[in-house]
Image (cartoon, rainbow, N blue to C red; front, side, top):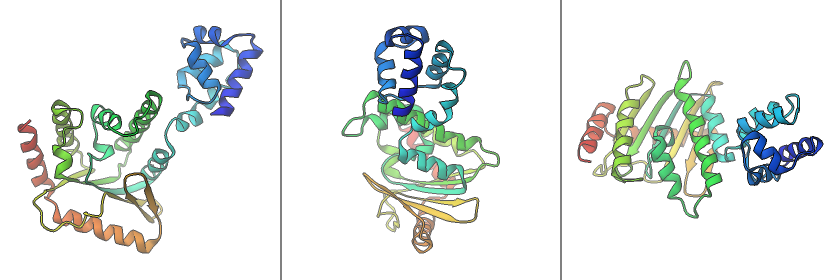
Length: 260
């Protein structure tokens, strides 16, 4: 991003424009232009398109859009998105919040705002853009088979408020109707629970291999060793067997929604 910023600055100075003048010409403030040139802020596609046109860069700035768009997303999210894009089957068990691919926009934003230390507005913008980019997995044809197991507590915790939670539960019921999606609930009263070690994810890739992710508070370890992946797969299989069936889970979520 610092390299992109230097390129924009070089084209601006070549055109004899100040940061204020460039900002006014492309619809942004001087502070935004300054942050982009210093590599602090990732420019949106419109910024690059407009700067390319105003500075007569001949497409040299606009051509950076694909790489810049990817750079907007945190590396951890980029890595997850690449794995999801290459998957034919993915399964996830979550015991803290609603799984990312199942979240509504307002729930996702409320979830990010709860993190401590708090994210800046720039960081929040990048995180939300990255989250939205992952949702294209539902548009793939053929779509991968996606299975999710949610701990009951994640469906009761009113992140963002009761109204946000209600719309989140309604969204789960809607997504569960997709032929490529199965959602299950792990009730709190279940005595046998193979997921007490924490959230996890299993992905089976197009080349026939499989990887897993062991997810904890500050780290998410990618597991590629076949023996360790097998252990995570076994654990996830037990979690699904111990949870409510998809049909029972939908009835459970309907009941929770009705109580809000």
